[in-house]
Structure formats: structure tokens, C-alpha cells
Image (cartoon, rainbow, N blue to C red):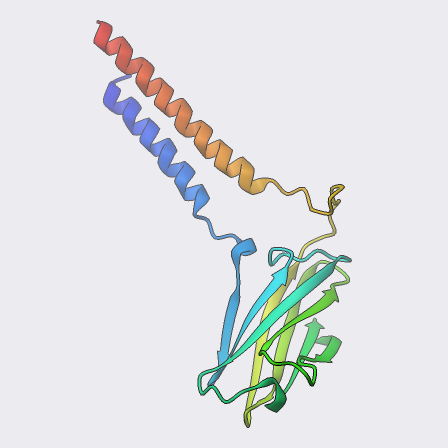
Length: 180
């Protein structure tokens, strides 16, 4: 095998490893939706991948391009739905809220896709923002309460290992060519 061919193989292995690292991950998602001047940013813990029958925290931040919306003039609600059936309904902001941010604890009952919808009237403008949330099957938790999901680690170490093997093969072949 020629040195150029071996170098090509090593570069191909490196490129494949890098491609695996840039695949979008739902665990990094924060979703922004808008309706007119009103926008909303949603994040669900843990890692935007809640698990069935485990408490999840829904973080929501409302934005207004006009800057007129405050918690006091926002008659805003959150509804959780699945297959067209309403499962939960609650107001977003308590009377003493100062920021357009809220955090709500919710336990999704089973795996699947849920719709988390924020709607109401903010500063005399009606809005309706709907987000799809994919709920994972329940998982076994470790002693410290975290799930054992190491897919990202496997991808990173696999790509690094492929690069290392390619580099070692290239170095060995190059050394063999020099000694001839």
C-alpha cells in the first residue's frame, strides 16, 4: 500500500470521525418560536430529552419585540397535550413575577411526542406558540440520579481511535519506506 493511499485512508477516517461529531443532538436544543411580535424560548431538563414517569423541568422565556410585555399584563397559559388530548393547563406567571421567564415541573406519563403550548394575550397581542417535546422511555438511573447514556462518549472515543489507528499505520508505513 502506497504512502499516499495510506494517508488518504487516515484522512478519510478523520473526516468520518469529525462528521459523527457534528451530527445535531437534541440534547443541545433550545427551541425558539414566534407569533407576530411575541416569541418564546423553550428548554426542557434533563437535556431536552425528558423521560417518561420522571419529573422534567420546563423552562420558558417570553420575548416581545415591542418591549411592552410584562408578567403583569400577560394573561399567559401553558398546556401540555398528547394526541389532541389536553393533559395539563396552568398559568405561566404568578402575580409577583418580575421576569418573563418561568420554570414549571411536569411529569410526562409515557414515551412519545407531546405538544407543549404557550398561549394568551401579552400587551394586547394574542399569541400561540406550540413546541413538540419528544419523551424518552424511562431509564435506569445511577446512584447519583443521572441516566447512563454514553453515546456521545462512544462517538468521540471511536473517532479518536480511528484517527489514531490511521496515524499509526501511516507512520509505520512511512518509516518502512524510509528504511528501504
